[in-house]
Image 1 (cartoon, rainbow, N blue to C red):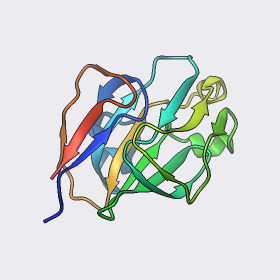
Image 2 (image 1 turned 90 degrees about the horizontal axis):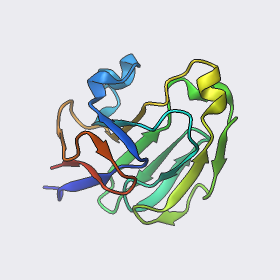
Image 3 (image 1 turned 90 degrees about the vertical axis):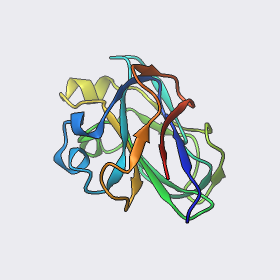
Length: 152
C-alpha cells in the first residue's frame, strides 16, 4: 500500500473542487483526482511545486512532478492557457530537475490569459487516480505551499 500523499497548493487563492473547474476533462476527473485553486484576479503570481520529486514534464502552462513513490502530480495553470503559447509564463526551473515541495516553478502574469477570456482556475491532480479519491484539507483560501489535499 502506497503511503498517504499530501499535495500542497501550487498557488495562493480560492480553493475549488474539481467539479467547479470550467473544463470537462478536469471536472470529470478524467486525468485524476485532486482540487483546484483560483488565484486573485489580475495579479502576477508564482507557482510552486505541490510535491517533492522529479519534474518529468514542463510546459509553459503546466508541469508534472513524480514523487518518490512514483505518483505523478499535474499542475495546470489556468484553462485553455496552452493557446497562449507561453505568453505571460516564465519558467524558473528545467525539465528533469529534482525539486522540493514549495520550490518556485514559474512566474505568471495573467494579463494575456484574462484578456483572452481564459479562466485562471488551476487544477492540481494526481494522475491516474480514481475519481473522488483525494480528500480536501484546505477550504476557503489557501496560501501557496500550504496543504491542499491528501490521497491515501
